[in-house]
Length: 255
Image (cartoon, rainbow, N blue to C red; front, side, top):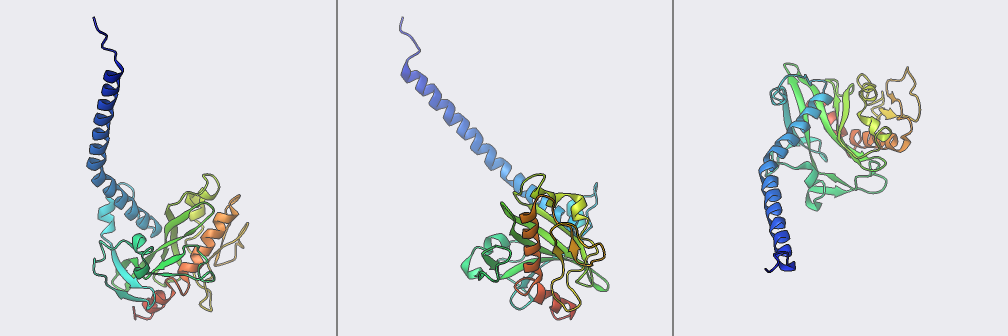
């Protein structure tokens, strides 16, 4: 009797299994993609709420996010603006790489090491009867190993820090990854973004901050370069190439 264990049959079975596995994986990826997109959006909103000090556990993130309005700002003029795709579909990260929708930064300008700065940025506002209560600003900049993406929230005076947090980075766990440590993030609320002369004052120092300072934040132990990266990105986004013009306009009722 002829053996069924031929090379051809073995290859055929292996090929069939590969095809079946590929179909299963591809189908799963397609079916799970909407859920992955929804979860990513939910996490994004959760981080905005957390930076603003508004996140409540046990309450729907979508429900909590209804108190936040999303607007677009032209960073050159500091004015609210619109784009063809609309605020909801506007992809700020994608546009930051598009030559027609962003500008290339010079070496002197690019303290945050982001290469290009988007022309139009999203901002998130909590508004009350007396106007803006909190403004949440998207920020990003290079640390030691990665670009850190996060949010910086300011209070109604557009100077007092409400919170800061990062939702994406690849810094070393236990070192630069301590940017996620609630204790370190807890050092930011109450600090002042700008000094009396209107210059960016908020700064992450090397070592311990002066306890009497309105601006200084303790450095990250063992992660000097990541701390410096956070300091640089704060200075960039609060500066003239960042949101300074918008914040001034907002303060004067001219945004």
